[in-house]
Length: 292
Image 1 (cartoon, rainbow, N blue to C red):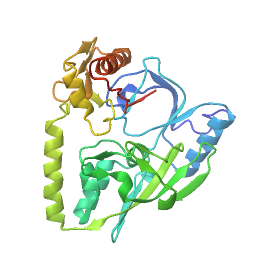
Image 2 (cartoon, helix red, strand yellow; image 1 turned 120 degrees about the vertical axis):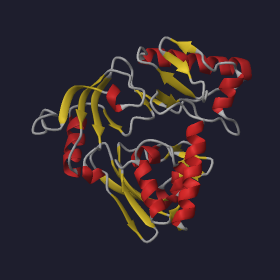
Image 3 (cartoon, rainbow, N blue to C red; image 1 turned 120 degrees about the horizontal axis):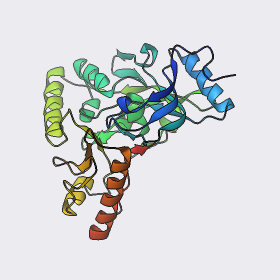
């Protein structure tokens, strides 16, 4: 059975992926799907498996660099309302995997629930944040996660309890194909105080990052006890440019791509930064961004 048959309304072929990522770079997906229900998603996933097609999930696109040649197989995006719901009950926030992390933060703060506000300014979806255990100096999303529901590459839906979940720096045990949703247990606090704290964190974070209109991405994980951005700056790499890609002047752990950039430019620049930091400072940097 063809992957597309019966799903023509939400499965596209040769869909450009650049508009769906923060870098605005890269080639098309062989198949691109935005399923409208969990059952549609399950059918797509099992069809892809049966046809031997690799399947990937695209969240907010902030942590992805798509190669210029594009992506073979199926790319899934959870844009339908069923995957984006956020509800609050007492101290519990339940959010769909496709919901924007920023929306979940704003709702929890408005309801006087503390914990997630430390993640303000981090882009992407709940699913992406859980997969990479998004965090800042104030904490990470894993410490508040009580339960997560996932779909495997075989289309099986499984709920994982807190005891089954493992979160570490920028990684988690949630490596199934799809994170359908999660439940967070937060702490009650005054909404006004929470809002002030969140706004202060947002201002500090935005002041040190590339400007909002720029096509940019955070590239490397921070080595234990060190700042990747500081290491790159110490290696004299700020403003280093390859083609249309440049190490950001505002924060050295970001690469900014101009309108003439290619993914190949960004990849070459990543290699140069990694090599020079190791050569000059003896530290091996590990990429945080996923390269498709």
